[in-house]
Every structure is written in C-alpha cells, then in structure tokens.
Amino acid sequence: MVQAFQAKDINLRDLIDNFGIQLVLDEQFFREWQDDLPEITSLDKQLLDKVKTGYFNLLNYPPLLEGVVRMAIVDPILFIGDFYLAPLYIKAEESVHISDQDEGVIIKGKLDTLILKDQFWIMVIESKQAEYSIERGLAQILAYMLGNPYPDRPSFGMITTGGSFTFVKLLKGKIPQYATSKVFEIRNPGNDLYDVLRILRRLTQLAIA
Image (cartoon, rainbow, N blue to C red):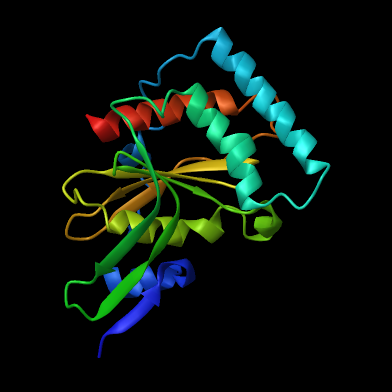
C-alpha cells in the first residue's frame, strides 16, 4: 500500500525510515559554507546594516509572520546579492513529488519558498514558531531537496526565521546524506548578515556551475 505524505507535515524520522537519509557530522562534507567565500563591498555592508536595523524595528510590532520576514529581510538580501539577475532566476510555490525506490512512499506538496536556478532552496519560517527554531524547517526543506531534478549534483538550501539563518547541503546518491552549517544570528555582535550574503553567493556559484 502506498503511503502519501504532505511535505509540510514531514519530519526527519519519516525521511530516515523511508529514504534512508543520513546526517553527516564530518566537517569536510560541507566545506562550501566556509571555504573560498567571496568578499562583499562596503556598499553591501551598509545595506545589510539597514536590513539588520529594520529587523529590530519589526520586532517592536509582533507578530513577525512569514510574509513580513520575506519582504523585509530575505528579499532585500537577495536584491543586494544580485540574485534576481541573469543567469540566476527565482521561482516560488514550486510543486514537488518524490517517492522512495520501492514506490511505497510518496511525498507531495507545494514549496512555500524560493528556488534559485533549481539547485538552491530558500525557506522562510514564521518567527512566531521560533520555539522550533531552524529545526522546524529542516525536514521540509530536505524533502524538497530530495526532489532535486539534478540528482548527481549536490543541492543547497538556506532556512531562516528572519533572525536566524542556517545552510544545508544534500547529496542524494544511493544513500542521501546531508549536513548543516552553523547558525548565524542577527543578534550576534557585528553583523552576521555579511557572512550570510557571502555564503549565499558562494553556494549559488556552485549551484549554477
């Protein structure tokens, strides 16, 4: 009997049991978020400082919902990074349909996120769900990444609540494997958005190479 799951309801246990996905703790597996990161300009930093200031202003007017986070934080970062310009393109509300090797499990649903060139997924989580932090979106974004149309290449993702950001790498292979970066927090001293932009640019370079 075929089991069907909605991607929004999926959890890590479902992905482990039905797809054999494995967490990799070896730091060498996901070096891309640390190595060969491009520099950003002084103008980039000025604009990201404004994004950070705007985030703290938004916190004064709760609740901070997904649409607001996307409009005030994610969209400006993508604009500053030139992610709307060719050869990149962005798609939203993408359908996904994946199954395990024995066709016994099907995951389907709409991806409430942004996709850069079919290789990079960006997911926004409502800050009102902050008690789940980044973990709430991890299984969901991995489910969509498993539907990557280029299974022989690594795919990358970013999950954000607006105040926290983490990056994900997935290699499908015979046994799907994934790893995450450290979590970048807007509340940290300095501006972690500098690193977020640098990593976004680096991973996007790799995704479209």
